[in-house]
Image (cartoon, rainbow, N blue to C red):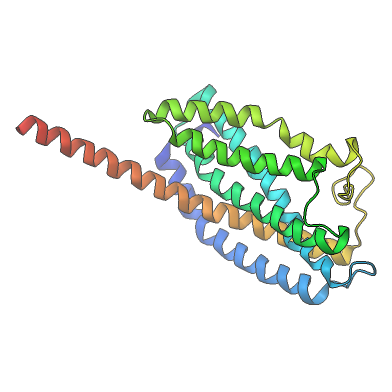
Length: 244
């Protein structure tokens, strides 16, 4: 992957995959919504409320996947000084925060009819809320420094330290007694969900993944263009100063 540390080569690769990512994202989203709202059966206990799962669960998966990508990118930036690495982390943070917020909101909407309350301070919900604050902290910490390199370093350290929260989120339902249901998809004994529900769940998850890369490429290109504009403005200021 070192060859993609070159911005020119990296953005050429992005230009190749970008239209396919859009096509896959929209196709998977339409197919996933059809399976989720029309084809999937009604749960014998939850009724139609179970359909919130097809938005909530993939959003929760994406919240952790985005943070993992962000932490790995920050580690790559600190160790190998890749030019693109931190830009990926910085561009991923708002996307991950949005997925986390979506998971929290849809989880509350699902929890009210199932548990009789919008929120409980159990291990799973609290650790996901901490994940949301880690995203916000990363964004805030980066922008709190006038020196962008110092801000990037501080935010990267926060991202790496915060990665310890990921296994806590994953195994919290196994380590502590919580209202949240235990793992039913990713488990050693195999999924505990019927195929008729598992299929739309995976299709929606794939749509979310494609959507993430779609938005990521847009944000990376915007950040690259902003950097070029700032460099051009700095050169113009230097020229004007020399002329004066």
